[in-house]
Image (cartoon, rainbow, N blue to C red; front, side, top):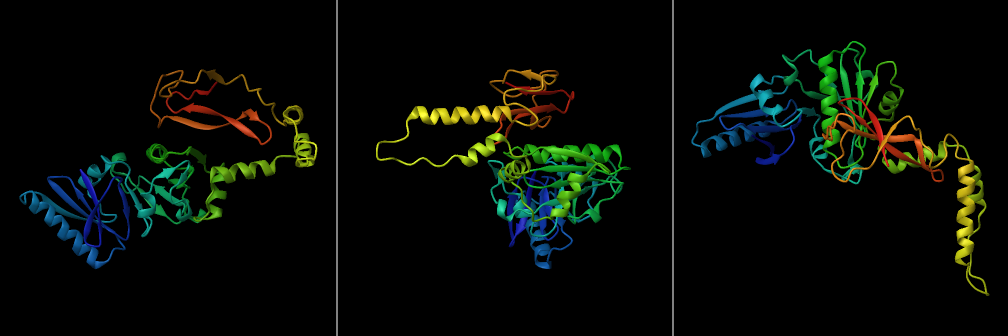
Length: 338
């Protein structure tokens, strides 16, 4: 099974089933060759796609069946072939190249060019759950429909919005596809589910627009600015830089004394928690040497083990640093690691 993008008359092999409305794709299923035509593609792209499909067929003796598939008119055979490669995504023109980029260290490799994307997940027009696909829709609150689910891909975050009257199929597929997006990336992306009516954070993300980009570093700065000033903050602000004197430099003992004073003040004004003190109601286990697994059911699938910030575990008060906790999507248990 191979999927190609028709680019300037040539076939470019791609790994993920991401279809742009402005392009033509050739899906080679050996005995059947599909030519998928986007609703906004040009005439020359259609011609090039058909020609490349015939060339592929002739290279194997002309035994394959060539089928043309228009956007939104996908056949069951086409959907079955695409589903073997992952969730089919249909995006607007000019987004495909961005989506195919990899990420590094928590941000997109092309983070400056990233645009947030909203997908609609609806089971109404599809025969079965395996024939469903994600379709890009305008990144706006006006797009939301109580009968469907929506997946917001924010680059470093993946949000799922569940309408009040959406069905189980839509919830299941939206969750699967969100986890797929999460698993394909190298950072700490974690899918988060919002139900209609309890979705202020999701709506706020849509209000910020498709061009808003928020890295983990930006998030940590914003969080620090919102926290009340502590005694440690005031002490740190009052410390003047040390300069060399005519007699000599600041001694190591003096530096250690300043650090100890800061730590003592920080521990006495930690706000909702004290560094080193954690919520004992959450299971704590030894950090594994190999693959992380659920301490209850033993599952090792990284798509089912989700990492999040543990705000009950304050590692350092100034600057505020939290620990991490994990949630098993299979059995539901939460735990942290030493």
